[in-house]
Amino acid sequence: MKKNFLFVLFFFFVFSSNSFANLQFKQSKDISDDTDDLRGIFIKPDGTRVYVTSDDETPTVIEYSLNVPFDISTATKTSHTNLLVSGGAAMDKPHAIEFKPDGKVMYVIHSNSGSVGVEQFNLTTAWDTQTISYDTSLSISDDVQIRALAFKSDGTRVYIAQRDYGKVKQFDLPTPWDLSSATNKVESNSFTGEENNLRNIQFSSDGTFMYLGGNGGDDINRYKLPTAWDISTITHETTFSISSQTGEMRGFKFTANFTKLYVTGDPGVEEDDIIYEYDLECAGTITC
Image (tube, rainbow, N blue to C red; front, side, top):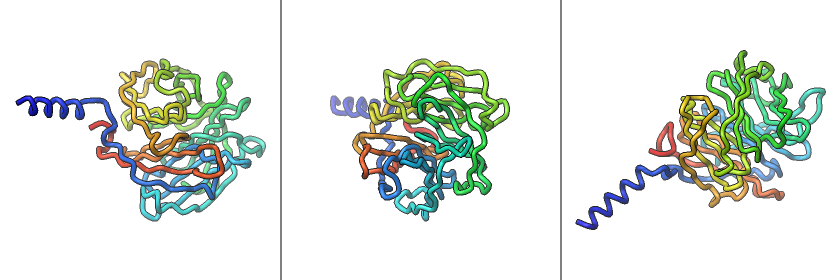
């Protein structure tokens, strides 16, 4: 009887606790031949392309095709494009990367001190980063080392966060997906108790959860938003460590249906710039 009770108690603890029990490391792809300074990552919604930012001497966006959708081991480099901003200047310290859902606009965090913000690029051919051209930017005058970037699913809000500022900022976009229209800044409460070296953020498809990761703890944290897409109050729920794979997370991205997670790692030396792939057993959530 006592054994049965203990089993039931263990079962209840495992399946009711806020753990990432269903997030499992699968495989990795070493891209050290392509970059010494791997940063942000984005995967095309159909899983056929992956994009990463590189903070090499000439900052770039590197594009890969995946012969098997969502399988990072099948990645083949297709292009390596310089990131040039206003006036044709090289974009120093690129970080997180996002795309408009139609693949015709790309956004990259610009975290160089004195030029902090988000850069917006148009793509002549959807999803082909060889065709990018600078369009506009959102300048953030009161921050340094901005790292994280996310959008509301309809493009009417943009979210950014700094390395050690400890809060997420949101801006309304009256013209969806257009950074030049940004207005009405709102800040979250602090998350420094969970992460002090932020790398990226992402939201669930309905905007009720936010995922925040960094290399302070080399982990990903999940937060609850009482009001969807409103980060004025966030509540921490759970944490998952990825330190077994990398001690220097640089970015992360879940697939749209939350069945996969990709993490970039760069230890700061001229090797081991790696993309890590994880499986999630439950679509739409990490805890199930």
